[in-house]
Length: 104
Image 1: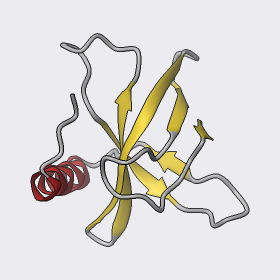
Image 2: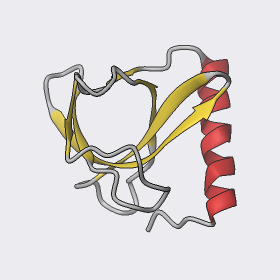
Image 3: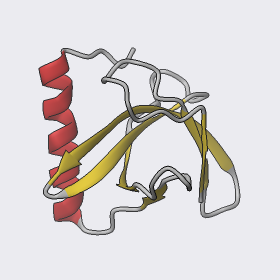
Image 4: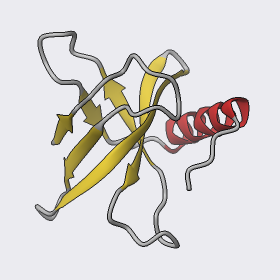
């Protein structure tokens, strides 16, 4: 489950896209900034950066992104397939290279 806050998908990489609170399998919550929403292989993906993680442990989380239109918040899904995850991660790396974006 994901609760989107101050969500805006109409901005460019590096601009404030808002945040999302993820409910993890163990019931804990993880608040993340939305880094990017981007296409890859005919699907949409979302890259999230945990807010309260120590800098040396923080890593980008990538999920499948489902836009439910203007009436509902989007959904995110785990990527179970290794090949799909590699595709999404490679597309995110390319996006970072194109935008010369620094996550720090």
